[in-house]
Amino acid sequence: MRVVVALGGNALLKRGEPMAAEVQRTNVRKAAVALADLARHHDIIVAHGNGPQVGLLALQAAAYTDVAPYPLDILGAESVGMIGYLVEQELTNALPANTKLATLLTQIEVDGNDPAFSRPEKPIGPVYDDAEAAGVRKIHGWPLVEEAKGRWRRVVPSPLPRRITQIEAIRLLVDQSVVVVCAGGGGIPVIRNIDDDLEGVEAVIDKDRAAGLLAEQLRADAFLMLTDVDAVYANWGTQQQKPIRHSTPGDLSAQSFAAGSMGPKVEAACVFASIKGRTAGIGRLEDAREILEGRKGTVIRQI
Image 1 (cartoon, rainbow, N blue to C red):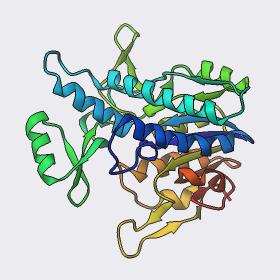
Image 2 (image 1 turned 180 degrees about the vertical axis):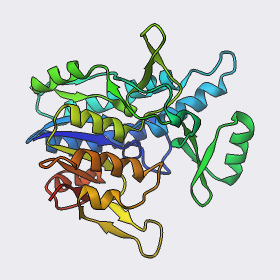
Image 3 (image 1 turned 120 degrees about the vertical axis):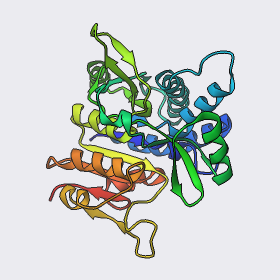
Image 4 (image 1 turned 30 degrees about the horizontal axis):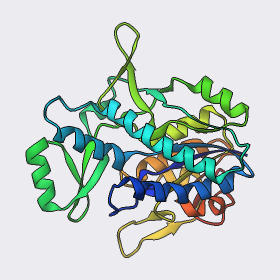
């Protein structure tokens, strides 16, 4: 099968872990083992998140006051280059010697009038406690969201992906059996300016929505979103929470999920699986094969 795999930023950097280079490399190495297991039997295309990483780069940029902080599209490109390098290298080490791999820095067009630009909701960067959050607000003026009691993160605009500018190049590589790492961090968000030139914008595209668009345009058979939770849960965070193991797009989309975390995953899964014959799956990175085979995670398909 042709399988698009979206790795969550939190699957590559566990919650609460220090954002050190070696910690990320260790996690990417583990991810590469799971991806290599899929790649031995299927054609895989790998997308990945960058929420923790781009947030760290934004903090570093803000700390150096001799120049204006770099905009989010450039920081996104930096983070995607870093993660793509690690993913490609560890996949190269995990796969047979003759495997062909390529990593593409991917620009994705968004609508400059997308309402998301006036409604930031995409969490990026580290988690702050109440005192740290108050300090961040005072220093940077960034909007924050409380993901859980006493756990705050910065939020930024997350416009919908409209067009993958390099889709033909990606398709060409995939058709030649190249394992492609692309659409990292949801792609680098760009718009067409008044001269019809590409221009970066201050935003972060949700990587699951971008990966879903990628899966659709590549006519993939399956779309897996791999993260650090084992499944989609009904009534998450309550005593009544229960994993949803199998669902149809219609049934799952009728339920409510958090806008900044599971909501985009469910939305992307339901859109992709709305066509009969396609399968979407959400679950833990280490369960990738079992999710694809319908034995773990949450599997979404038309009946």
